[in-house]
Length: 450
Ligand code: PHE
Image (cartoon, rainbow, N blue to C red; front, side, top):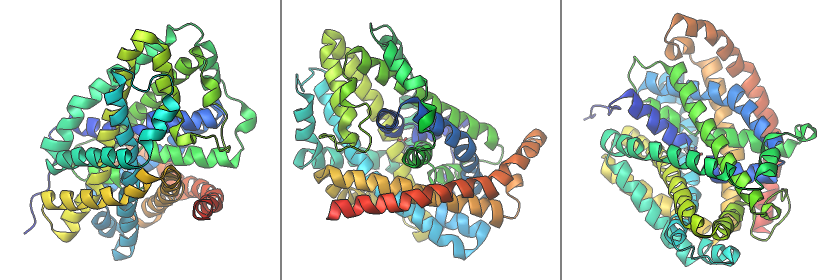
């Protein structure tokens, strides 16, 4: 027999959970390293444009579909579009599997770094410390440990697990990130960091590689294109004002990314470490781009002396909290589908899904190159492709998306802009991105296998 669908207890609870999904490793680790590799402010600018023109419309679409159908992705798409759309929902579940499998490996590194940060265990050679913990046995253990924590929270359900975790953790994250950004501003020599980060080199804007990366990042950071926001929306009630919620979520997500950059770049420039991370785009720097911040920032904490023993642990707490609330939403997509489609119990589903994802993550924990490829496939293909599917679905297939999404009369008027975006601009932009991304991802995969 179908159980009554769970619901958020409060609007704040929902918003914090959704912001918790959005804010994560994507805002701090991924955003910073892509910005560092990809030309600083030019990348930031592209990312802002994609967030506003593509991210926000799709976020609203996901919330509206989820709330309207009150079902996890597979059933929700079938509800509005018929059974032919179930494969798109399946792709979402597959994305959840794939992303969480390596996301949890990086979160596992974060756990290790947090434990090491109190005594700055990496000493004067953070590079070899990273080498030691990022691949192989230690990485597998930390990854499995992190998955276990995620499973426990998701097994607790929407109110007692997911919402409660977000209510406690997200405010702490904001305070820490803002605090470190202020601290970084007070350091001597942080000026060039801001310049690199905030004044764009416009000649780079047309670079297809940068374009693809910025689009993938806009999706990843807002948790879009794989049904996470759709699933969270399915626990909402009718009276929520979706355009307002979507704006708050996107604003908070962007705000944290911006702040994260204001903590990372001033810090590494002030301490003279920029040579390690800046402008390595497309090169095969030894530690690999994905590891760069896990080497450079710890180095910065060591150089700070005693202050580093405070800033370091705080930084990794924030990173871990962000990772956890995001991992929760990734797992929830898979779990909600198990519950809704297969009729399983939440606890059993969570345990099975969590175990399977932990297994799938082992190759990423053993080999950094594999992690990098999984991340590229997930972002540049799955999320961008999923976003394209969602735009077409909402723009062309749903009968009355505006009534599903809009609350007030003003909003209905604004929606006249939303629908053409979803119908034309978003699909066109995403097709262009895929045009570049498919061959690039393919050659990366071939590079790994060959
Ligand atoms: N948005 C999360 C982050 O920035 C990652 C994520 C992607 C979470 C997709 C859920 C779905 O870290």
